[in-house]
Amino acid sequence: MEQMYFSLYVMRARRLYNVRYPNQFDYKTEGISRFNCIQRAHMQFMETCTFFIPALLFAGLEYPREAAAFGLVFLIGRLVFFHGYASGEPQKRLRGAFYVIGLLGNLVLCVRTALNHLE
Image (tube, rainbow, N blue to C red; front, side):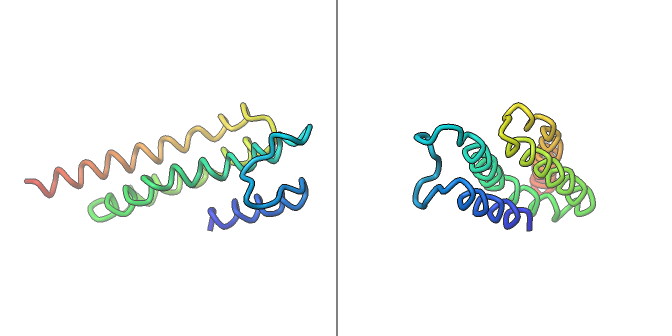
């Protein structure tokens, strides 16, 4: 759901700033850095999900409640991060940096799950 929300946000920004596909960013138009921030925030979320989702699923095998709690922290943090970055002032993304707690928490649970299965 969050990924769809971010995608729709980028699509709306593409129309607003007139950035056509296949261009990922617009470095030519003066004053369009806000679009670039929105696009980068979306892409950064997709990059992070490539290892967050498998870790969440694997950690959830042994620690379903803890994995879900860390997953919620991750999602809320990513939402705050996205809106901070999308504001056009990239330093505001740091307000959502607490998403790392959810990410690292699930990675630790993932390792614990693996170690439990080695015994």
